[in-house]
Image (tube, rainbow, N blue to C red):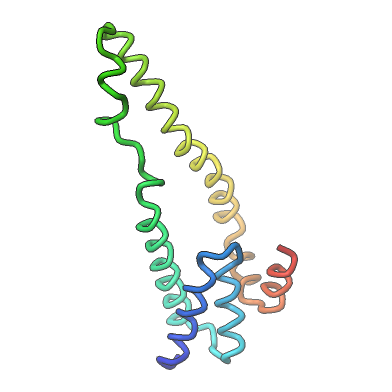
Length: 140
C-alpha cells in the first residue's frame, strides 16, 4: 500500500465515520477499487484507522458519554433540611437514572459480542467479499 492509497482510505474513513453509513464497508470498497490486496498489514491499518475514528468520536462526545459524576449528582440547596436517608434516596435515584444509559448500552452490546464470537470466521469471510459488502450497503 502506498502513502497515497493510505491517505485516500483515511479520508474515506474520516468522511463516512460521522455519517449514518458503514465506514468499514466504504473502506473495503475503496480498497477494492484501488486494487489493494487484503494482507495482514492492510487489515491492521484498517483497524488502526477505525480506532482513531472511534477515539475521535469518544473525545468529541466525552461529556455526553461520561456524565456520571457522583460528586455533583445533586444540588445541595435542594436537599437542605432533609434527613440523611432522604438525601441518600435522592442521590441513589439520580445515580441509577444516569447509570441506566450504561446498563442499556451493555445489554445492547452483549448479543453482538456473543454472535461475533460464535460466527467470527463466517463474518470475516463475508467482509472480504466486496459484492456482499456492496449489497449490504444498499440494503441498509
